[in-house]
Image 1 (tube, one colour):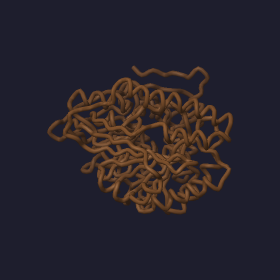
Image 2 (image 1 turned 120 degrees about the vertical axis):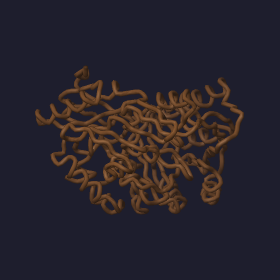
Image 3 (image 1 turned 180 degrees about the vertical axis):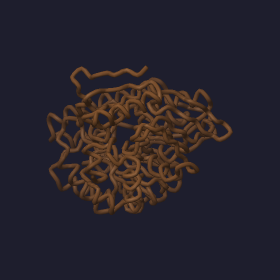
Amino acid sequence: MSTTVSGKSGTWRNWAGNVTAHPVREVAPASVEELSAAVRKAAEDGLRVKAVGTGHSFTATAATDGVLIRPQLLTGIRRIDREAGTVTVEAGTPLKRLNVALAREGLSLTNMGDIMEQTVSGATSTGTHGTGRDSASIAAQIRGLELVTADGSVLTCSEKENADVFAAARVGLGALGVITAITFAVEPLFLLTAREEPMPLDRVLAEFDELWTENEHFEFYWFPHTGSTNTKRNNRSAGPPKPVGQLAGWFEDEFLSNGVFQVANWVGRAVPAAVPAIAGVSSRALSARTYTDIAYRVFTSPRRVRFVEMEYAVPREALPQTLRELKAMVDRSTLRVSFPVEVRTAPADDITLSTASGRDSAYIAVHMFRGTPYRSYFTAAEQIFTAHGGRPHWGKVHTRDADYFAEVYPRFGEFTALRDRLDPDRRFGNDYLRRTLGA
């Protein structure tokens, strides 16, 4: 039996606290049939419908003034097909639970992002990604989808069945229906060796192509107001496992990366003039280290310090120039940026609205501590990113609209035409989708 629940104040907030919504009602269906019924009932009542995961998106993708679907009862693994190398999982399953369950079965996703708090449907629908030379976003690992469409019917799609829907719905922004289950490609559990070390920004940018070519997964963090970065290279390993020790892990990943970093950001928010000095200390705080562990433990890190984020994908070859322009902008401005800038990559994929659709991409993510004014920084950064044909991450702050997306996504019209067919009355629409996809 589904439960209809109302928030204490009738208000939904995202993780970062920068988006709020006031749904008429909230529904937590316990089955696909109950979800279908909830969509049909919303249509009868003339209400719009949005499903929400853990609220890790910084945009209003999931905000609604109608019916808010909470998928916390739609969780768990439906089936594992070892012969096909796939696992089918309910849409509300958090990535954290999926990773643990797969590891228990001796299986793993090929690549993932750096946090695992999101639901599988929320992460894939917004194009969440990690970093990879050959392996792409989480959505690119999808082999099949099940979703409830605007009339309450259940539609399944894959490369062989409803292929046009499959091409679009893997990164569907919740605009085509409510996802109820996802089939992922999986592989036998594997080990990664991570090598983390500081490196001057000039060297990273000069050697970027080599660092990208020589490593399966390369990423780095640049500390604004400094010429310093911290690099991370993840490569497959035959073992044996050598995880970070419990004490060292607590000290570096919790005490320094979360505890001390939180305090440093509090100080920076209160005294912006102190930020460059804090950045200098932060960039030297983490020393080089190497460790080997099962994949998801290496890919992901705890992220407890709350922030607001903008991230753009630019053509991979444009990364060094784009980052140099970003550094020059910060250096000549009065901005005080206490959060490092994160840089990752992804190979081209064939998903209609994936940020890596049809082109090898590099991602540049800018962050500001929650409660710190971020608009002037993000506006200046966005001007640089868009000058390089950048595509914003669908789950992160941006100001782009449908006209812009029609320019930077060659298949944008394909997506909107499919939306017109599947949801002509915009049952799954909201203000954010009106801006980004058009009316």
